[in-house]
Amino acid sequence: MKLDIKINEYKNNIEALQAVESLEVYRWLISLGEKLNKDPLSEIKRVEKNKVKSCQFDLFVDYENGRFKAWSKAMIAAGYAYVLIDIFNSLPLEEAKKTTLEDFKKIKMDELLTMNRKTGFYEMIEIMIRKLKNVEN
Image 1 (cartoon, one colour):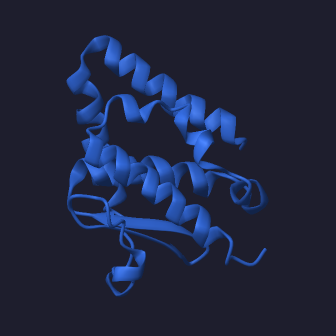
Image 2: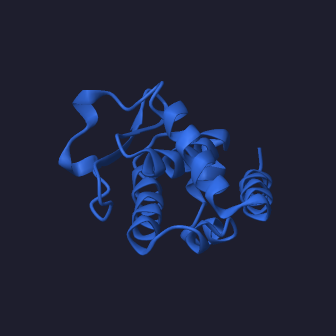
């Protein structure tokens, strides 16, 4: 699946929910956070080197068993983590490795997240991009 297709899918969902009511986006993110924690990052991987440090609450991400996984008890952070994991895991490895921070600005998630959440969102992307550099094809 091409990156642009997946990015646009989330961008369109956000825009449709915003058109209804701005709180709908947060409800949607919370529901995604619940989905994320049904198959979370293993507890053994919830360590400092896998932590999104700028996130207000604990948020961890790592490449585990051939794909990204994350965990957070904060449902909005878990929701945007789900979005990022879904995008990265849907791409062929070579395409995922070419992904940049700029690609994710098209979602316009930064327009609806608070400053702390926005910082955590972008830090998580950077962590995931960095971790992909160590993944063998």
